[in-house]
Image (cartoon, rainbow, N blue to C red; front, side, top):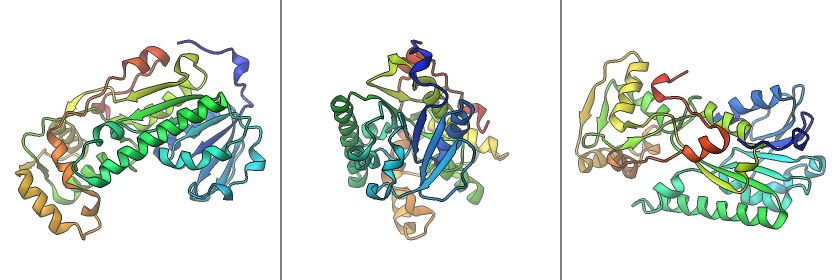
Amino acid sequence: MTQLPAEAYSPSTQILVTGASNQIGLYLLPLLRAQQFAITAFSRQSHPNTEGLTWQTVDLNQPTSIAWPELTSHRILFHLAPLPLLSNLLPYLPASLNRIIAFSSTSCLTKRHSQDPKERELAQQLSQAEQKLIQYSQLRHCQYTLFRPTLIYGAGRDRNITLISQFIERFGFFPLVGKGQGLRQPVHAQDLALACLQSYNCEATYQQIYQLSGGQTLTYREMVTTIFQRLDKKPHFLPIPLSILTGILLTLRWLPYFSAITPSMLARMEQDLQFDHSPASQDFGYNPRSFTLFPS
């Protein structure tokens, strides 16, 4: 991969990390500290400061509450929070900032034509936020890189793999629409953190958008089978027609556990959600692990 001169970002470079306590931040912050960056991390939860890491407890929906005068020397932003929140921050970012790495999602593509209006709205919000970042970067001559990951797992904080694991733990089986042949590529949060470190100083990634999928393509059924195995449980599937499973779901939506599941999520069990991450591999050495190595 093409590297910028070492002096472009020295170990003492000051950086910002928004959404720093999320599942990607859990892995990214130790990597950045090992590089001896001076880190200012934003989170909704309070955290104690440590050497080289200063926390600000902020609500990104209220950018005026952030202590921007203290951030006038920061040069890199890793935006790990939901991408639409970055749009709120753009007018306030310090002029010293010349590099942004931000996370969108493949949902901007897969949910664009969903039957669920909330999912279509999410896809539109992501697409609009991407365009706002691109426009900002062009106006401010700031180099951006956008990552669109697929199903994220690895820290127990996602709403996909973790939700499936919890269902299996609670009920001992998993309902399957059709044969569950839709393709999936789960990606570990640590591999996404590594992608940040691999790309921040890589000129080939400037003004680029990358789909970041996992290192293994499985059917939905194979993915769930792997989860059964990691829970030391024998795979037990219960095939249920989509119409019936949707009806059952609608009667249970008032329960907190089932409120996160939508009929559209059920219908996607048979849909291929497959993305090519080879451009990321070519440009900055992205090399994600296989899902069968889960949870390591």
